[in-house]
Length: 189
Image (tube, rainbow, N blue to C red; front, side):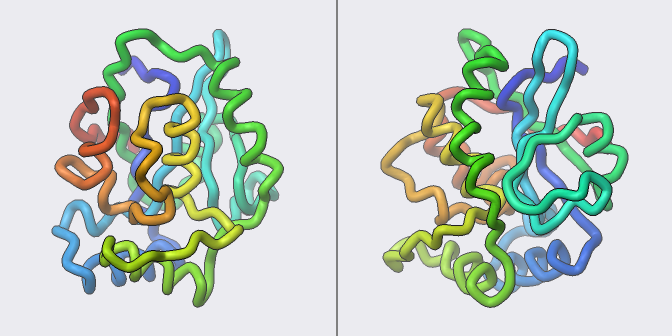
């Protein structure tokens, strides 16, 4: 299976935070398969290496918290749950160097949104008419959308903190404002 830089990684985690995210998404009416998506990340590749770019509470195996980039094979091996990929159909591939430059400012913002503020922000994403202020901490889908907006692949009028992970599943709101077509989710772990 060929993977391209900026493909979307969808995860259904088994940890405490992932289970809480799934519960909130179900309570807010997300459909079964979509509600199981508790985390999103971006796939990246250079000439020789592959990476996962994400914002997460903690990767104990990598000894990192917050916004980070890790070797894809290790990230996949240690991720506690299922992983799916959705391929972006880009007219012209985006180079790793361009994406690496786009993510640099986010790597400096290490904090990850979790706890009560994160739960409140996640819950309010299901009510788009509520003018939700963006907190300084980033959650997973928020940082991915910001990077895609920086790369002119996503509508810049959309507030990045208004998209819960379940909306990245096939048929979700994420597709509506994406400036390219996207494939169905394929399980890779």
